[in-house]
Length: 283
Length: 75
Image (cartoon, rainbow over all chains, first blue to last red; front, side, top):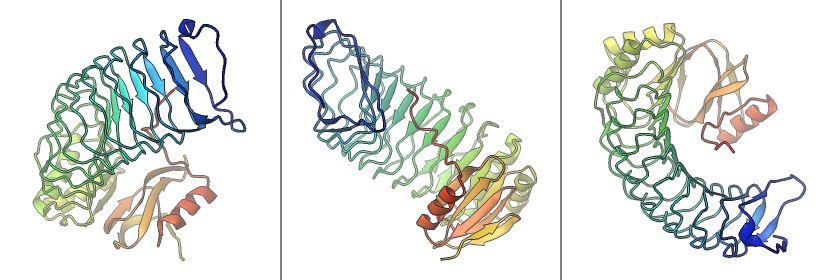
C-alpha cells in the first residue's frame, strides 16, 4: 500500500480506495489510529496482505470494507466499534475465530465468507438490526446460534463449514428471504417455515437431516434444495405436498440423492409441480 | 469427456458420479448447479450433464451463461 501523507488525518471521515483493474494496491494496511473520526474505510479488490489493523480507536467507524484482498491474521476485536453497521471482509485468507459481536448493536451486515475462519459462530442475539450474516465457506464448527432475536434478518448463509446440531427455529425471522446451511453435518428436522412468508431460497442439502417439522411453505419459496440428506419417503411426500399447497409456479425443488423416493400421493404431487413449470428432482 | 445437453427434460436419470446444471436458454441464467445428485429430474428448462464439475464450468463459460450470486454484497 502506498504511503499516503495526510496532514490532518483526524479530519478525515472517509477513506475509499476503489479498485482499478490495472492498478492494484499491495502491502499491508498501516495503523488507522490517527484517523479518530474515520466513519468509512473502504478498500476492495486489491492485493493487500498482512492483517486487518487494530480499530479499537476508531470508535465512530460505521463501515469497514476490505473484501477481495489477500489479508491474513484474525478479525480484530470489535467491542469498541459500537456504531459499526457494516463489516465486509469476505474473500480473503483470514484465520482465527469470529469475534464477540455483542457490543455491535447497530450492525446490519457481517460478511466474512470465503476465508479460513474457525471456532463457533458467535451469539448474535444483540444484533437486532442485522439484515445479512454471511459466513459460508470457512471452517466453522459448533452449532448455528439462536437467531430468534434477529427479526430484521434477510440473508443468513453458513453453508460449507463443519457445523453440527440442528437448524434453529426460524419462526421469528419473518423478513428472511434466503437461508442457506448446506454442506455441513447438521442433524434433526428441516424447521417449520410457515412464518417465513418472504422466503425465496432455502438450501439445506448435503447434511444429515432426517425430517421435516411440517407446516405450510410460502408461495415466494421458489428454490428449495434438500438433496443428500436422510429424508424418508413420508418426509419427501410431506415436502412435495407443502409445495403443491403453496400453489406457486416455476420453482426448483431438489430432493434426491441419499433421500428416499416419493411414494403414492408424493409421486402425484411431483407430477403436479412439474405441470406448473417446476424443476423437480427426487430419488 | 462427454457433455449431454437435454432440451426435453422429462424424468432424466442422473447417477451420483455425474455433474449437472439446469439453465434457462432464453435468459442464459443457470438456475441450478453445477451439482452432483442422483435421481430423476423433470424441468421446462435445459439440462446439461457432464462427468466433472470442470466440464460444466467450461460449458458455462463457453456458452456465456450467468451464475447469479445473490449473496454478493451490494456496495
